[in-house]
Amino acid sequence: MRSKLPNRGDAADGTAGSRGDGPRWADPDGRGGRGRANDHATARRDAVQIYISAHRLGRIQIMSSSALIGYGAGTFLGKSMMNSAHPLAPILAGVFALLTVLRNHYGELSKALGLGLIMTAGRLGKVRKSYPTGPHLKAMLSMGQREPFPPIFSGRENVWRYKVRDGYEGIDPDFNMMRTAVAMAMIGGFCGGNFPLIPAWIGGTAGAVALAFGTTLRGPKGDLYRTMGMRVVALMGEMLDVFGELGLARKGGYTAGKIFDRMLFLDRKHGIRKKVGAGISFVVERVSRTANEVKADMDDSDDEYDGRGRRNRARTGRHDTYY
Image (cartoon, rainbow, N blue to C red; front, side):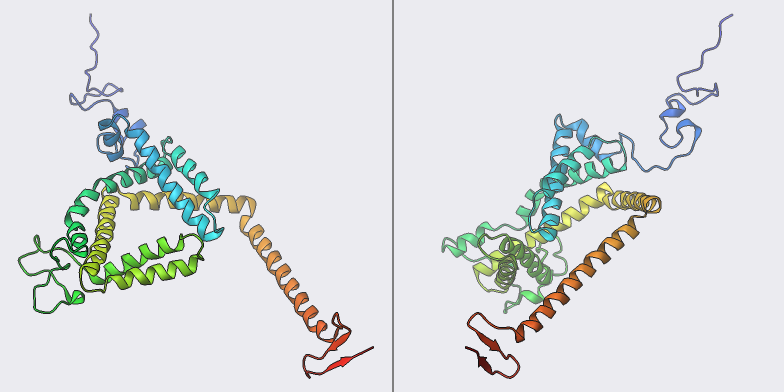
């Protein structure tokens, strides 16, 4: 007598199932008979896996992009804390690249960041077509007529009061003067702060003021500055859209929560906060003690002799000479 074999769609415990449903372990929400939160998307729905499957070098591209993000983050942190990008920038670049190999929340976040940068770079062409700079450059070189940006619909040019006309939402360019000025100030501050032979705060301030002021000019130069500023604003908008598509806010929040929980666990186990607080208190105490000693020495030096045999009288302004 033949034994009845379970169908392909039957479950492992012998219960019948519809053909094509697959075994229970293939269900991401019910592996092992236990419910599981759908924190990770399956391979068919995950944008990272779709990109890797569609491109031969997709995994390497995502790893390189993630390393670039890590290098940028390390550069920013290094410049802010140590006034030098090294060695923090290369270290974070390597960490972000290695995280893409892991199959956990840290790896998912790193891969999503890398793919987000790739997708944002892919939309640069759209931003460039929406805000072309060629006509303004030609007008500056007297090789063509001026094309005001934003367009002038009334007799007086006022870039601060520009609005898209009703019924022309898909035709008139999107423009916001405040956002444009802020974007150009950020670009100017970044470029000026990294200019060689000039202190960072001087170069950053000068660059921010210069580019922000350029957006207020009338003529081809002002049109060029405003177009460049709106390119930055539009690119930031595309980046936010990409972040929403990839769910980076949710992944970043979950990963930050995991890191915070791990830090609390280590703090309870090793008393890290107490040790850090004790170290900071020790440093502050030493600095205060040294400052007080220096101040006391400076006060005592008012009554000491100088190198030419004269006694200083700083408060009265008199000098008594001894032979």
